[in-house]
Image 1 (tube, rainbow over the protein chains, first blue to last red):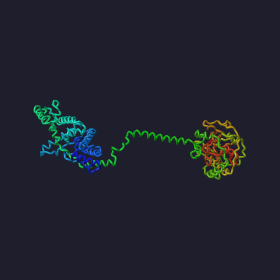
Image 2 (cartoon, each protein chain N blue to C red):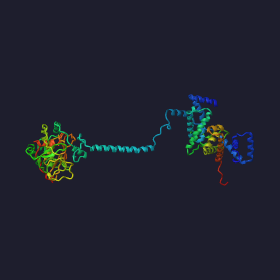
Image 3 (cartoon, one colour):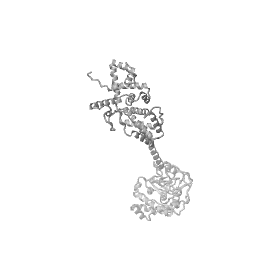
Image 4 (cartoon, each protein chain N blue to C red):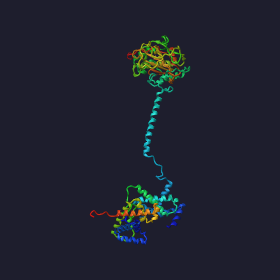
Length: 194
Length: 398
């Protein structure tokens, strides 16, 4: 959906077209859910936060100016709600990337496209994804937000800056620190003999 | 490592944002610095791994659920929109106030009830202090006694009819002494004590022209004209002392005598038009005079207004037997242990709405439309009043 189509859809939804509103929500639900899940690492919490994000979008659709893309606006709402949720939630829970989640969906690592996986490679990949998700969950909220938007949502710097309302330079520096922190967390512990 | 190199350059190389010249220079740097090369390789692998992670599918119906939730919120307030319920601390603050208010209400109500009960309502015979059994004027509250000490209202001329008829209807006396004795379950000894009193009935009263004692009437220029016959020690036999068993022979004799006298009197006072025959005297207050010869008891009633030293028992019996139009009559049997009895007459302004004269130990309720002075003078002139008393009971005099 390009920017023009998105703008038309938003305008129709503002005029009260339920079909346009439903299509608008369906176009954003996947991204919103992804962001929430990467941020909170919990499927049920992510679904709840995604629903809250969509409701907020419908409630404040009249306030959407259209300066940025609707996806950026939706991601920003989802990110703010996720960060608020993380700040309220003291004991952090992490979702396994290799184990099926509660909704019966496949584990995240099972649907990685690519070569025909061998059993050994599947096990290694699952372990790696679990470690990666655990390491991401241990990052600071600011670093995790930038990393999620950059690597998992694959947004450019400017969109991330618009989403998080940060300068581009701040986004880059946070991203670099987030990558270094993630590397340190993923590095295996040194052997005692060595 | 990264402190010695530009982070933006490293990040740009990992993110593949460098220009070809910058990338060539950084490749040369990586060949000379293996540590930096290892870092960049880890970052590139990490980025590839993160970007290679497939996005999980969202739960089905997420958008529809959000739409339904929005519609529900438009119709019904969500828990966040509801007004906050009173907190437990607020309830804890209110509970003592409620408890104290309840206690204060109970105390106030109790005080009001007690105060109301202490106040004698003269218009209510059931709740009157004077009409309560066993409560005399001396035992009444101070306020009630003060009210009783006030001057009486002027007597009305047509007061007798209603009271007499009510009295006659209420108390139907026995026809004969035997019937009365049987009704009262008396012994022949009691009959002997009573018989003489019955024999000396009304027709002998006038023959006993005993000296008259004048009793001042407070608040008026009248005094009581009382008989002068000395009071015997058994003149209280018509009454019952506090603590005395109502089933003793002396009491039964007194009650029987009262009933007989009442019957005799009730039959003849209907067409009687009494006019008190009084002599003005100055009000007398204080203790009983020494004419009675008996010392005043320590618990004497306050301010006795007069006494009947002689022949009072007859009048007393007459009063209690057939005069429902009396206002108040208090008798203090101070001669219970051999001393002459005194009869103090009190006048009260309070109305005692009793149809018949009722005895309350040593107090007799009297309707309000008469004064004790006129009653006693009427009794003095009534030829049907018994003139003699019951014989002395040795057990009582002792």
